[in-house]
Length: 333
Image (tube, rainbow, N blue to C red; front, side, top):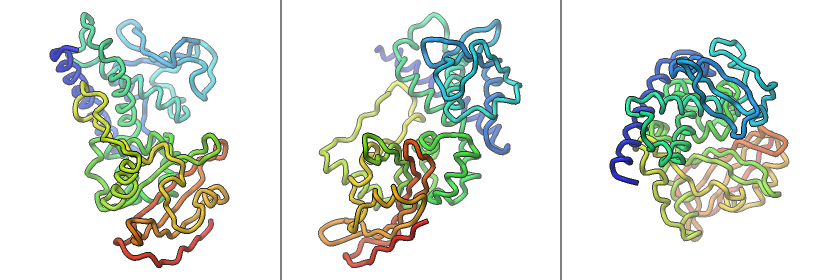
């Protein structure tokens, strides 16, 4: 890819980012969930239509406007072919979280199309197709969870799994979308006083695995990210999409994909079995640090899915490194 082409997609992606951030700011004083119909209007989309297409979804030209076309079999929502909802239709807020993400992703494509430098006679889009798809998923999280609205609703309760669980319903997003929103560059300075991680764990191939997580704080990063990378002899992952502007930088945590027992969170007992056998609960932990040193932590969890089993889990560091000796207490819920 030429440096000229890279420079252009960088400028385009930055312009799209700013446009989505402006839209989020304009909606920030409204209650969640975000009105995707209003977002669609801003970027020239007039409707969403369901058709039996090959891909999951796409953007099509409709006169002077755009329309989103969604595969009739691509989401949990089942609508007959030809079903159309205009941007003013009252049904938009009732779409499932998966369909809302699909719609937000396609609005993000419209944000790219609407930039001043995105002319028809270039092949920049094709050369950067994978980067743009990744970028549109990032922008979709911004649409669904605008920064100021999210911070207002979350307040100081990021590690309160009951509160986070309620916000998934309020914002009509999946736990993956919610937690990955915390990865993005515009949230980097938030919650700097916390030390621990928030995760969504889901059963896969007979094991409870950490599907997505967000780690904060010195002790948690050192113990649950850096130490795990060293154990795997992993190097830092390179920036995957250098052509996108720096605003698209997002965290990538070593815990993601691990079986829940792999990080050895507790020195006493099998944590996964406790998560499997209780709807919710809390557990005081002594997490191994070095030699006979431990860091005291508090684990809390809430089941949010049954088939497959899925839980919101947070582990919070509650004190400095100290010698082994604290008694572990489990309080079921």
